[in-house]
Image 1 (spheres, rainbow, N blue to C red):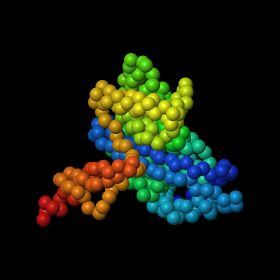
Image 2: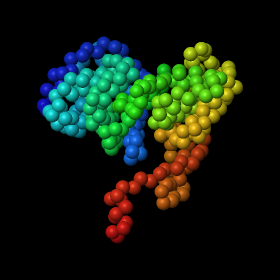
Image 3: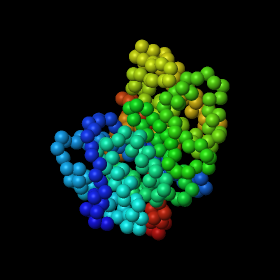
Image 4: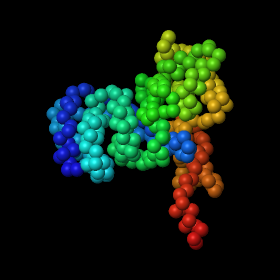
Length: 308
């Protein structure tokens, strides 16, 4: 598909002021039968738009610099299914110029990926060219999104699940459950299925990480100032930890992955090594820690030592 043909479908005006908030997307694909899982974290800072600019020129420059592979791959798909072009172009424009709220952007992508799940790997490749490719192993995979922003976190499904309920769950609801005195606040998860449990645990882990630095937590009922109520902060963290252990014991699952942007490795060599992982000295929150770095093997990597 010619580049100009792709751009002629993008004619949305952008007048909103740029924002400086960071957006993290966690997109996971899990097969119910094969039990395979792929998780990707995408990081993006909105680009400031100047007072006078050419939308077509800016999009061209952005795509040429970062997403030529995306264009070459997506052109074949659009050729076979032209109905993809318009919604995909609108999503790309919204992403580049931040014309809509980040949750609105994801929900727009939700409609496209629900109808065309094969676009997921190309979608990820576009929003950040350094992200790895996610391959869906089965058509029945449940695809979830966890969005983490300054205003809170949300999780929801962008593909059909085995239950009729469509969960849209956010940090405010999570905090209300953690702080409630209900005997069994997590019983609603049985109705949705255990596939959702790990994602709720992801939110709990994110809460534990955020409460290390946040000065405030907003619930449905009150605003708690951590600087003057340190004892309450400790109690809230204990409740989050208790909820994590309870969910793991009740449903027999563990959280997927937890993104720690503050953790760093120190030195150029591992301190200890093993058959499946290396131990590095690292630092997290100004504290010296041990980092266990798992090794990944592919069939090709395994065959080479055997042939030698």
